[in-house]
Amino acid sequence: MGAVKTKRMPRAVREQQMLDAAVRIFGQRGYMAASMDEIAELAGVSKPLVYLYLNSKEDLFTACIRREAKALVEAVRAGVRPDLPSDRQLWEGLGAFFAHTARNPDAWAVLHLQARTHGEPFAAEVAAMREEIVAFVTQLILTGAREAHHDPDLPEREVAGLAEALVGAAESLAAWANATPGITARQAAATMMNFAWAGLGDLIAGQPWAPPEEEQTGAQAG
Amino acid sequence: MGAVKTKRMPRAVREQQMLDAAVRIFGQRGYMAASMDEIAELAGVSKPLVYLYLNSKEDLFTACIRREAKALVEAVRAGVRPDLPSDRQLWEGLGAFFAHTARNPDAWAVLHLQARTHGEPFAAEVAAMREEIVAFVTQLILTGAREAHHDPDLPEREVAGLAEALVGAAESLAAWANATPGITARQAAATMMNFAWAGLGDLIAGQPWAPPEEEQTGAQAG
Figure (spheres, rainbow over the protein chains, first blue to last red):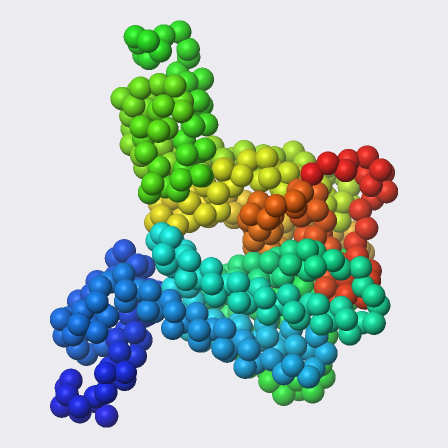
């Protein structure tokens, strides 16, 4: 693939390479300190080509945010089997979320830190992704409440608040997990599941949420 | 000191007035759009006096963050009576947190949004406050676990993660509550307590955390 240098490679492929490099540099250096020179060099292209394809540092950053937001939402959705009970769905969704953010720490730094710390247009991009995830979690809680056949006393407003709380907790925990050596994605997902499903009351009483047995033997990886 | 037209008011008092005005303008307009002219006008002083006292827009913003971070931490600490059981302490702490953020929406916008969206030095100020709150919550969970006399299987790492999750959830919920008409501070605190203490599992099964009875009759206010 990486042939002659820049020739013969479809534009779409080359653009992805530029975005790969940009996510890495933005995530590690921060938006302000990131240089277009360094991004072009890491992508193995000339700086004018980056500008030709992606127009400006702002547009390049926006393209990174959009791509990574889409990838994160897709990873979470793909991780969830909608035929399972809602606690299993939440467990799988959290597992997929923490696995994705652990595998793509630069992308997560771009979404969680950089995109929110450099002004409105970027923050709005992330807000759109966040709303999608909040809507997903809201549905999950509503479905779970319906499953419980309990005519559960959970007004829609309350559910909206719970979904906001859950997403905020997961974001905070992902940032902590990525910054704390030795915390695996699975541990972070388990902590989050304990917190969100069992609650501190049960946890403190020694009654954590238990992951399904089939999985306990199987996937130990982080 | 503050010669000419601004005589006779101690510098400390006048500085607080400037900070009051600055928090309002920064919180409502955003850091970038906020103008020093508008801040001076709202404070009822001349712009040169603002610069004389607080040096620059950056320094003024930093002073706002420090003052509001300190006020928030103090409000939470003051709301908690350390002799109560840990679920009551958490309830009171959350009540104090949401009451403070609801009463001071501009200050909360400065801390939660503005300070984190305009670069490192400001973000570091907020990170310090956040660490203090996380440490406070960590202690609360540890104490609760000890109270339960259960030799609870909650390693320190897990507790650190739980505290991060709880703080992230509360931050997210406070932003949502302030942006959602008709959500009172008490409702937000109850949602958060349900989420964090009872957990979604119990909630969905129709078993929310119940606030202590004495309070249900008393404080209904938001």
